[in-house]
Length: 357
Image (cartoon, rainbow, N blue to C red):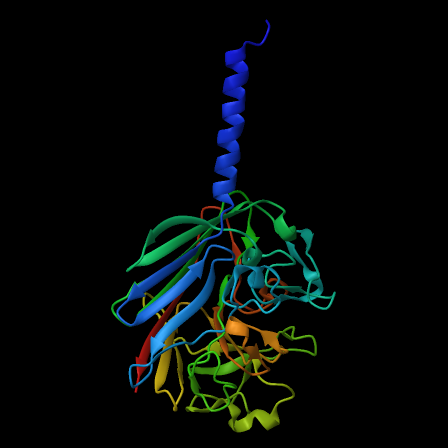
C-alpha cells in the first residue's frame, strides 16, 4: 500500500519527538541545594559536586571545594574534581579480575597498567538523569550502566542522592543494583576539600583525625599488597589529631592510602571516620560512613591546574576523604568482597557535618 501524506507527517513528528527527548536526556544542568548559610552545587555531568559554600567562625562564606569555572573543565578533567567515580573506584591491579571463573579485562587508564576509577570513561564522565530535585532538601540522580561497559559484567542500575540533614549536615547516599549478573561495585565521592577556601593554598596546617588503626599498604604503582598493617609509630597515624603537614617529610610524596576504619558504629549505625579542622577560618568538617575504608589523599598529583576564577591549584592544595571498599578487592580474597549479585543491593553512605569554631 502506498504511503499517505499523513503517514509521512506522523513519521516526521515521531522523529522530531525522539530527537527532542534524546536532547533532553543529554542536557547538562547545574542544580543548587541551599539551607541557611550552607549551599551546594551539583551537576548531572558525572554527578559532580561543583561547590560547597560554608561559613567561617565570623560568618564569612567561602567555597571549600576545588573545581573548574565551567562544565567544559570537567569534561577534560584528569583530577576527578568532585566526581562520583565507579563502577569500581580506586585502582584494579593489572586492569583485570576473575569472577565466577571468567577473566574480565578492563581499560588500563592508569599509566597503561591498572584501571583507575572505573576506566577511561567511568561514571564521572557520563551524563546522569535527574530523577528528583528539591532545592532546600535533596537531588537524586540515576544512571544505567550496561553489560560490558568499561569491561564490567552485567547491567547495573545506579543512583545517588545528595541531601541536607538538619541545618549543617550534607548526606550522600550512593546505591547500585545489578540486574542480571554478579559484578564488582565500589562507588566513591571524589571531592577535593580545602576548609580555608579553595584559593587559600596548601592544606598542611589543617588538623585531621582518622579513626583507623590500620591501612592497606601499596606497591610502587599504588596497588595494595594484600596486607593489612597497623599504623602505630608511622606517619600514617592520625588516631590523635595532628596537622597534615606534621610528618610530611617522612613520606615519599604525601598521603594516598586506604585506611581500615575502626568500626565502632558497626551495625545499623554509621561509623565515624574522623574530622578535619582549619584553625585559621575555624571551619570543621566531621565525616561518618557505613563503609569499611576511607582513602586519604592529599592531592599529590595536582600540577598547576587552572581552576575556578582562573586560580591555579598547586600540589597539596586540597585533601580527599573517599569512603569506600578496599582498593583492588577483586584481586585480594582476604579483603571484604565488593561483588554484588542480582537481587542484592550496594549502598555507600557519607554524612558530613559542618561547623565553625
